Length: 335
Image (cartoon, rainbow, N blue to C red; front, side, top):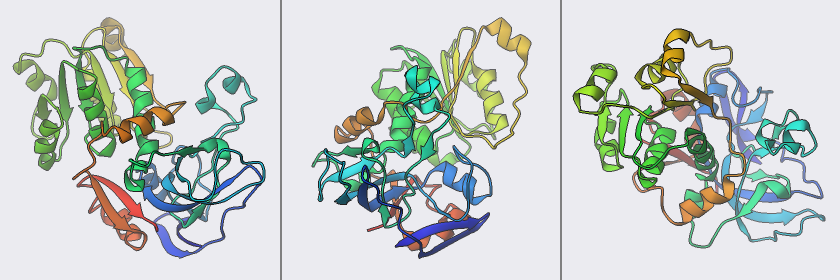
């Protein structure tokens, strides 16, 4: 099959690659679209994603497509079904699985390499999508499901003042979710000035450029007395430090962005203590895939003008240049 194969750091080739094995409990899916994730850029740079990387391997995990074959033990899917997938498999037997925290399973593995013509995930990782939901938009299911977990951890109440640091694809989805959930005010912190208009259109109250403005000062100058919640959607040490800085006493901070493996965050422990901050991290998408599908079907997430569609052959150049990534969420058309 044709796939975008990562053979080493900075080495992605669109070439023929063996199809994934088809087992009795698997569903073979012809991939229609696959989203380009920040972790794909991490892997391209020679770093870990959510899990360690073993070369060679096709990139991608945010896939949608059509069923072309089912294993003998599969009972809920048939050839021709339109589906999306959860790429994270868990064993169901370990301590964390038994405690209802399957996303923390120590035996977990990725079962979707979506920048390829075919994937063969276990049936339990495959989800039907409604006829009204396009295969293109359905490729947003996995990143949106991760966002929903982050929003759950944020524990936002109606009327809360929320700061979102970073308005890449994840930040833009977080912005729309917070707006739909009736946040009182939403402050977007983003250095790319061209994103100001989109942020304000999507529900931001205030847009602050951290390269030219003092974020905390601008927030207070705009009459915002207290920041209740902070979502860090970048994964840098500097943006995590900024998240802790702008959080006011009693605030909750969710560090959502994926950092480099081994990145150490210096924390002013005394300030965190006197503010009585709640600091959380967010990891993948426990049980939120069905809700993500429902929200996409209901068009709670605006995709027009947000999704940037490219071909598989364009992917290696995009990983180098981020030409389309700077404009929105990149979706790779496979078939």
